[in-house]
Length: 89
Image 1 (spheres, rainbow, N blue to C red):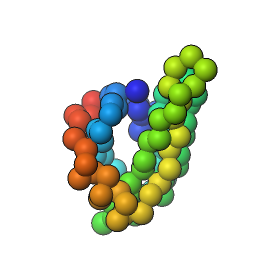
Image 2: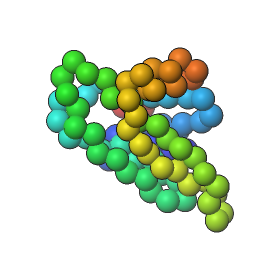
Image 3: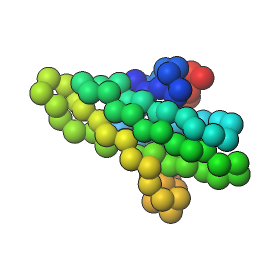
C-alpha cells in the first residue's frame, strides 16, 4: 500500500514491513493511500523516535488502513518482528 511523508510518496508497505525516516523536529504528516486515505500528524521531537502502526482492514473493494501512533515499547516490538523496506525519499 502506498505511503507518503509530508505529501511525498515514500514507497509501498506490505505485510511485516516498515519504513524508517529521519525528519527535522516539528509537525509531519504520514499518509496511507488505500481505499480510504488515512492520515496522522506527528510532532517530531529532536532525539526521539516515533512509531506509527498501519492497521489494515478489508474495505468494500480493496484494503483500507488506519494509522495510530504507538508507544516506543510497542513500536520497538513491532519493528523487531518486521523487515525494513527502502524508502524512495
